[in-house]
Length: 473
Image 1: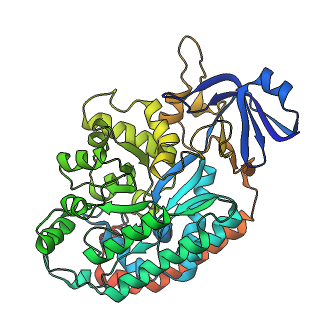
Image 2: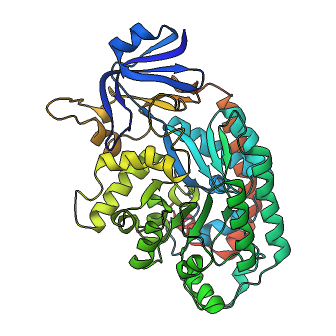
Image 3: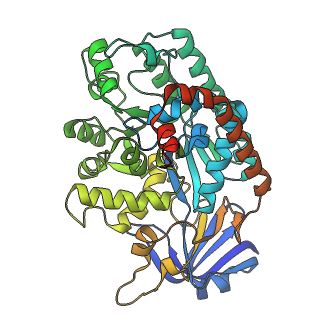
């Protein structure tokens, strides 16, 4: 007898090249693994179950994957908007983040994510050693790394074009922290938690440190998660230090390959983006964050045209104001279609694949998650098709469920999240912990950070503080 049978649903397996639709579909789960996927009539006979879930009027699909986010600064939601630079609003608060604030940020991000159907977080530290015990208890899947940089905190006092000083002792410390993650957490929580390695950007690490990072990644068989060409300052740093742009430098040191997850790339030329895509690297596309922060659409269109694989990410709640992959699917599709003046450029079925199977491929987990297939891990969500935002439901001659999932859903239509075969969210509640207690801790911690930062915010006269005084916030 299997543990769980989901039946009578509109099942989207994401297997093959499309969405793998099965009408009146079923998924059989044994332990943490999918035992079979098929028609309800077939699986009901073959798999007696300890628990049966009737998914009539539900869409059944793989859990969504957030391929790139920084939960460490999640408590700063709503503090970096409406200003020429995101840093102006966020920095005074970032300087006051405590250990409790790092943990509270992870708790807030993960709770919001699970409620909106995200089952895997590609979390990019620092603070992972604080965060991971919570992820283990919560039951979420996570692919994490710790930020590596050897630049001391002097960026704000340097003149434009002045080179960052490198302190090898800082770089070695950060690399050891990432190694500690790999040694102690890679494969932890029954395999739910796995680890990457996270150099911050081409301008933040020396050539020697990059060499050590690459050697470590190859020896440990882990992905390299790297921001590339995030801004003009990075380009200038690389030209002044090496006489090369970031992508040329990365090619020179052997970083352009399938091991790489390339993040943002907003200051890359089209030729540079194409070069990265052709190398076999994947791209993390965070549309909301970059549009809100910088008014820029990252070049995922160029990457896709070059044949590259793209995942979606939320980046951080301080810049995009949410940890919701449904939002990223919609905005990503709209932004690329508008940028290309082509309403067919990123069709909804492709956006859904970026949030599922192609997201899994980007972070190196497509052999385990991202599609509903026998032998894969049981990361599954159920979406209520009777919610007004999902209606009407039509199946023939045109099926409208996928367009509505991508362009209409808000995340609150998710009624169940199953991760590694366990029901983690059901009937509006996280099942593995006391959510109300956590939310109280999160609010209290945010207020403490706010109190500690308030003097500096007033002193710096940030845009956001002025808008508050003017009664525009």
